[in-house]
Image (cartoon, rainbow, N blue to C red):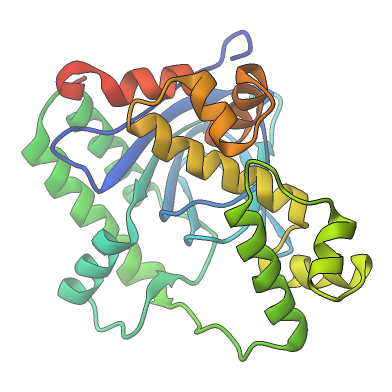
Length: 278
């Protein structure tokens, strides 16, 4: 962390379906990346600027950043003082259950807008954090569900189903399967294109259209996702780095910190903390 920056990424042991991040960033830049969970970020101070679906959004105090699972986005400070925020990362299964119970949404629920000014919802998210940090599991769980139900009611809608796959999309999906299977030792772009009987630039174009980023950026993001699962299971950092294809522990630390927002060691210590209470 830079001077004046701080972050805690953790999970309350009685709230296993949601990750929590409370952070202050001054010069932090998140590269293009995705989340397996939903993102509900409540800005407390400063401005967060983030690129989402080809547009730049700015969220200030009382604002929310709302991002659906798997949607590529990047973020950086939108003002000289950086930004401070509280973030909920609820699992898709939890959001689906809350949507089924509290809304009339059909299909996969999601957010139809990426940024809104909603001080009441932002304050509710902050209260979830305070309750969880204070060991008040019942209060935190109740407020979390109320917060998710509220943002779904106000800003939710069904996520569009994936369009019919084109030949390019099918090629991109085959390329992704290769990279997932051989994550620790992936082929070069030329070799990958050769395996799929396509050209390198055609593959780059198809992959970016399908997944929102080129293969090498997608692979780094996927490695971090897999590294999180290994760290959750207690696998040592050096072993995790090798398993997902990073050259060494420092390579893992650099990319993990850029994408997750905290170093992998700090992330794992929170996951393995006895009782994992605040």
